Length: 343
Image 1 (spheres, one colour):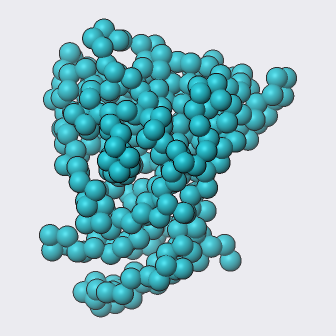
Image 2 (cartoon, rainbow, N blue to C red):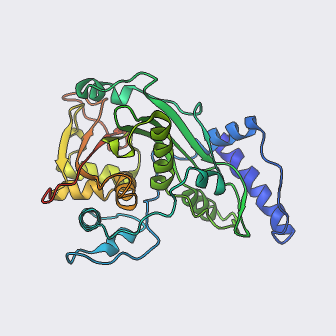
């Protein structure tokens, strides 16, 4: 039996047992370290890499410059036009500073909401970024690259409410010396809970309030910057390796003119934020996490914005055609200071 099936059966069994006692029984024992590792691997294998529920703010944004901030609340980007609209709304949020600021500012918030860090449970695959890093003068060594896996593995009772561990996990590598985040795996608590519901499993507990990639990753980044004496606002690049999210892939292929096989290896193709294609990519499920981080941690990140996105595929070869399902593009999101009139 696949480990992904095992973990679902285990959690389903726990759920059934708790429901039998009217959800009043609290399991006080925490999993052993080996059990956590098995759970993390099982959950990781249950979805393709970079599957991502878009980072969405809970608060209502005030409109500015007449742009449609409601686009930021869309649960899924399904069309080219809706992606452009969402990207435009992010740009407006950066310019106007009207996005609601995150309430999660302290590293201790991670433990409060059931997150725990394991720097060893990450596979830093240098293959997808090797050529890019060489061209940009960035290091592939460790250090300065520091692996960081953060999993939602702990039950927590916060403000009188029980929040059960979901097994969600974010895996990435931070390089605060050179201002880089390399994202390898995104699987949010909200996504995990929705998967159980889709499979008709009961999940009577609420998702943790700290669940978004943008908030969890900001806290990890901020802590590593503090430990290294580096500025939080030094962020310059966010790389997404081997993207398998169907919505993001479709937007990338459309930005390339509808021909998936026109994607090339690094330096790939650059799309500036001032173009429709650039806005659509900013609004994609993968890039929207970075967009939210910049909008909701505006002060700490010194008003930085996304000015361009590079898409490429290290496996691309001239004249070689592949089915779209076999193409796993990478995305390099460039972050810069936000001068007036950038767009």
